[in-house]
Length: 206
Image (tube, rainbow, N blue to C red; front, side, top):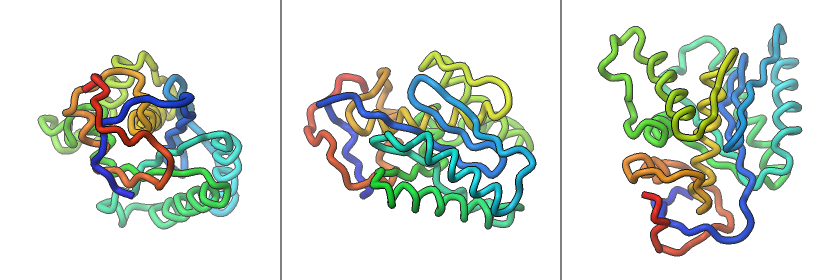
């Protein structure tokens, strides 16, 4: 379900939301106060996919909601895109089989939630724009949530943390106050059918 209803109030116990930034070489996985990168080393092909599936399944088994970054369709010709699509379907199929709701976030929506705009590095030279944007998301995670994403997979960790915070916000349990300029990103997400607050009262966080 795609919904623009982003004004909710917290009810019930705090949900466990996990963000996943899927990658063949470094999958970011995070909650709202922790982040890690799952790195399969030298594995390739089916063994690598199986490793990711097992590692991810073990970490999300108690989640109330998993939030994944969706595909960047403009990258369809890149090496590994076909295999990465397979990983996405393997993970979401496993979530479905285990009754764990999941949401799909477009890459642009992730950047809007983190930085307020879809292209935060537009003033940078084109050849460094993508990397600069990743750094801006990472900086936003550190400044806003106090979560320092360091070392290998640091950008993947930061993306996953943003995804986790988006899910908590949508469920009515935001961790920090965000202006509507950032929260408008929630309307662009494909959210699951699940029990969540439905009041239209403002959270007072925007």
